[in-house]
Image (cartoon, rainbow, N blue to C red; front, side):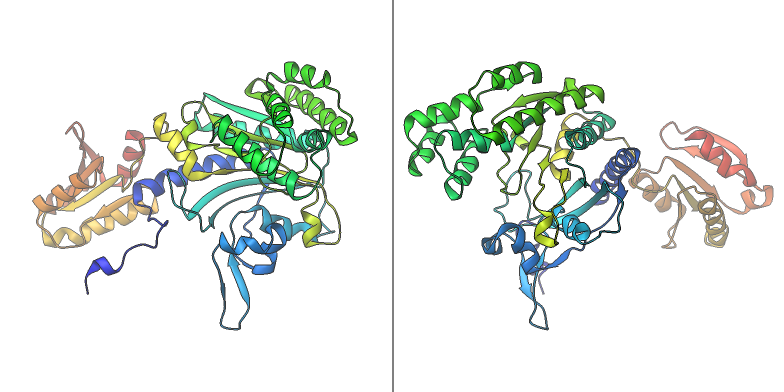
Length: 437
């Protein structure tokens, strides 16, 4: 049968050794930052009951995810983000000391239209804090995101912060009531970086928002700049809704918290940030790589104090941040920040003749036991072909083992890049290779 039959499903892709090496390096950097902040690594299930996924997003989510019936007729779905699983995990756990700080890295599935930097299977990193209503918790998850990018070497990025509570209250003050029309307005505002003003104004018109109100909405979402400057401008507005005043106070406290944690200089306040997902109900934010805004935000998040009640019997305040690994990798690639790491073994042990292959295997295994990545010939090839193979896989060091080397209990370690050979006693090979690293 032709191999063309066995193609990948649309929106899926394989990861070759080079990409996987980069991903593992990236995952370790992310985990290291999360652990420094006291987060505990977890892994929510990849398959949920469909009703669990629908509880967050409604029955319409079926059109956007992978779902199916199992052999017992139960409706199940693949997770489409990590927040649902984390919220479900802790909703009924009254025994856990608060705040509960969980972090995870995992794959998700969405039945979206594949496009640049967006696949139907993708990986996210995620940190969440449950049990604290304080803006200091929001400040901490923002700081985690900032520190991850800093740890990776990215320098030219900005965090844009707003408050969903404040945005909703301002729209209500303009006469846009709660319910579907309010959500529609927020979804239109969320497109501000993807569509021009004329197109957005047209969409507002389609849901019967008057031109005068549209102008006032654009005036509000144009507020952006340093936190101090934006807070002053917001304070000058006539805000009549109680929730607006609460949202403004949260932004003031957040600025103080970010300043205390030493990360305020990375942040702008931008009232166009509303996050298009309906469960957000407080501080919201997105991070943009200034050199790659075509990719979209490289992480985002915010507060969702009412989500956990869907999965349990209590409201538990929560805030979190998540970032797409694929988008982040594009930014790192463009900035040339991935380490020049080896994909294969550190040393190849070639056998000078067939009779020496056992000795080559013994030396390779002793190096592996010492923590040195090593490989030897598995195909019974002549010496020349073995050396060709070592060159083709980019091994930095080569050792040839033959009767002479076994008799003298010493070998020559050859640096493939410089062709320099160093005579080393057999028992000292591992130490020498560490020294040469």
